[in-house]
Image (cartoon, rainbow, N blue to C red; front, top):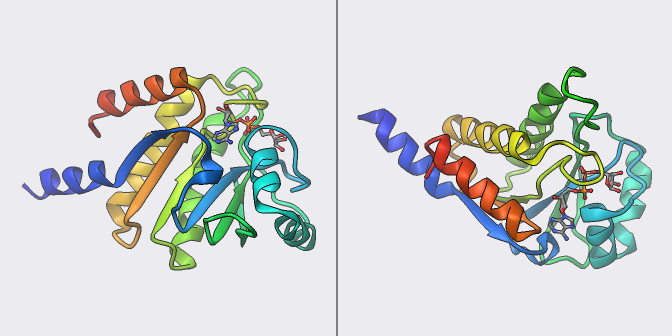
Length: 182
Ligand code: AR6
């Protein structure tokens, strides 16, 4: 019985959304950054454009973030109060510990949110754009890691995974069903 309750709680806490993560109203949004924290294209570019120069100023002070780790800045002009910057792995074929690094990127972002008292946060699909991680495999890593974290961390109330394209959204939906969270 307790298992069932746990999985019900867990599933209702993970929400899939389609669109632009910069519009999210969760307390924090997660950025798929690079290890220099110097901005770039994709979701990183969109977050810095929408959030304004304050975020980059803070990133410069922090200096950098190795792959698999996470750091935090304020949200600048965004609706979100914070941006958690994490760095996913660059896909090199699957034998370069990509899965482990991607798992750590999600885990460390969630752990940082917990430490900061953040209860609601949004993730993009880390590493599946410029860094080339195959989407279906990445969706399993993302949703399993978030689901496992939420089991032991009731302080996090809601995690939104924001998918940019229709196709990505459908693949994540299928994965959520497959792994039993929907
Ligand atoms: N909202 C939500 N998702 C988005 C948005 C958005 N506004 N824009 C793009 N995506 P990517 P990565 C999706 O390339 O693969 C940057 O230059 C996109 O469709 O942003 O981790 C950094 O500086 C894809 O599914 O991140 C790094 O150098 C997903 O976000 C590098 O790219 C991730 O794509 C990081 O590459």
